[in-house]
Image 1 (cartoon, rainbow, N blue to C red):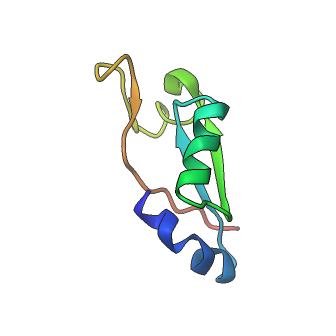
Image 2 (cartoon, rainbow, N blue to C red):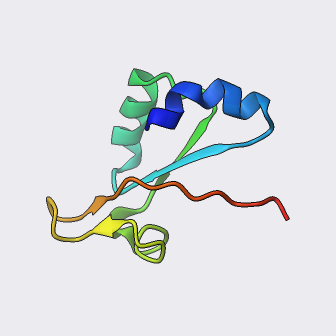
Length: 77
């Protein structure tokens, strides 16, 4: 979440920061408040099946399954 501290600059540059985790929406809301994530979209992917596993960003052996740190840059085209 190091990029989260730059979320305003990223947003002003016309990009969007999306953070994906296995956490539910309630836990994500707490993270958003704690880290002041005003321009960051939080996406919940419990079990990592929809987003994290296909991107190779999921460790099923750690604490019942966690998201691994990673960055994916998507072109608007």
